[in-house]
Image (cartoon, rainbow, N blue to C red; front, side, top):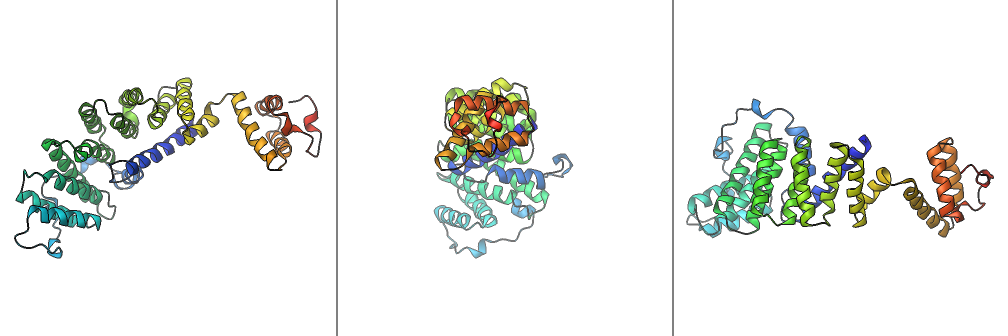
Length: 345
């Protein structure tokens, strides 16, 4: 079971990374969050003297960088927004934060102010994930990003920025290892987008990173799969919970098989390794060996080697017996001995 858990953990990281790259949640991958959680956030938050959500540039005494941006004295909000986007593209995140603060002061309730909060949040997150900074600085930046997303939700302007404000904060709570806040944020996202399968799937994947909330995760994954039965990512997360937390191998294998039948390559590998019946395993082996036969190779020698290496393991010999009835061609006399011409397999 430990091997299965390891395979699923690796898969969860891969699928979350794939989701983040393929969707509008463009900030960072869960691999980055995993590294951050293990290296940067490896000691309790309660021991830190967090002072709230003040202006982070001022609080950390970071020198102004906007003097490097060519903006006129009478720059408009749109001038600031253009500069913010450009600086973000150039990965000058501290400058983005400072420009955003000035734009917010200029038009605190402007028509495009939610866009400024969006880029400011992304910049704060990037700074929060920067391991060259010390832990306190990272936490402060991440807290500021949470506040930015809160402001986007307050404005409640229905667009992709609002969706991000309901989802990216989940990633921050994973990094901070704050499971209670993660659950609450996930519930808010699910309530806001009740019938959106992509949101349910996203929350299912985000919850799966914290083992202690597996019951909540299971409910969300059930919902995601109900909304989209072809959601292979949520099927695999649910399978992990059934295997590792509920001890339900049958249920876990059912989910892995469904995901496999939908074409997910990772699921096929997991099913073959941990769930396949002896006959299913034999069929897969036959397919592989028959392909070798077509290419002019000698599969019988490979089969013989497997039998010898097993030392007569009953499970291996049983599989060979089944295989011989399914694919006799691979047992044709191409081996140097007559080991496969008796009735021991």
